[in-house]
Amino acid sequence: MGKHYDRLETRPHARREADLFGRLPQVIAAAQRLPAWRKHLRGIDPKAVTDRAALSRLPVLRKSDLPTAQRAKPPFGGFLPGRPSDYRRLMMSPGPIFEPESHDDDPWRVARALAATGAGWRDIVLNTFSYHLTPGAWCFDAGARVLGCAVIPAGPGNSDAQLDLIEAYRPTLYAGVPDFLKILLDLGAARGRDLSSLKRAVVSGAAFPPSLQAEVRARGIDAYQCYATAECGIIAYETPAREGLVLNEDIIVEILRPGTGQPVAEGEVGEIAVTILDPKKPLIRFAVGDLTAALPGPSPCGRTNQRIRGWLGRADQSAKVKGMFVRPEQVAAVAARHPELDRCRLVVSRAGETDAMSFRAEAAAPSGGLAEAVKASVRDVFKLSGTVELVARGTLPNDGKVIDDTRAPG
Image (cartoon, rainbow, N blue to C red; front, side, top):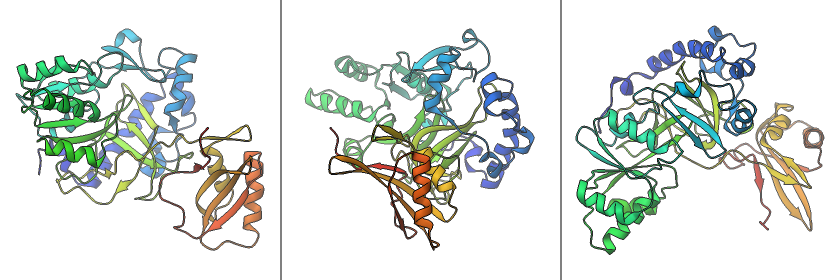
């Protein structure tokens, strides 16, 4: 069911874990030679981090912290080795976050995701990701060329010229955001242009709802989703099985409770944290700010790596209550004081013309006085008063939210 890129994709799970965590100490040791990582991982013995439990005790580096670190020590904040001139390309993502590209053939690990679509030698890729400043187009450009594909560096926009390119070069695979694919297909149909060469698509960077998936499929294009970030490259990709996204090889992915570094149970929604096993460009417990959940078991396509549900929203939740910011880390701090609590959520609302907040928490068998103790912790941690509601396990939605702002905008 689909083309496998190599044998790594079908190896037993235990063998993959042994390989990844056998390599991890070397990556941590390499990171600790860099000033920012040395400070971030102070006191960590790399040789002791050989399984997921040990990894979960390391601090998380949040994507939202990178712009501040890079401004303090430009351009890379002390998290990357060498000088800017040591890299092949120097780019910038929104934030701003400065992103270098190494000299490796496929530094963003994209070829594997393209191969899952059936792409290979003699395919022609219409690459409509932006080549301007950001890494997106270069990620897919490199991965396609590793597979032997020819690449049209189209970029986004200029739809009329894109139609000319398609009719002239007859590309077989579209790479870009799903919205622009629909624009091209609609415009081509309206103008009677021949876009029939496009048989497959790899889409990322925007929502791809079921309605648009069905429309693209009805037009004869087999489209696959990828989940990627500029810092990590391809994290997970869709396969012909169409059952979730399979994690990429050579990375370790954890799903954490927002505001903490603690992994959630399988199936529970949490924040994605990625560890990249590249000593030349280490990234350890990098929390990207997006939510997902793990799916049980291997994919029917034969790939044995863990699967995720895809993008399920943002984990960077915060709100302002009575002029003060409340953050997921504070919800986690309250929960840490009371081991009886399971899933917790701060609900922000309006009571008349005043902000109000309620701390809701699941507790299997709350002891006497627990609600009052939690209420005191809420007041101490948030410096604000709020009500406390203890509910049965399984009551709160499994959506990754720890702060639910129900106030109407405006």
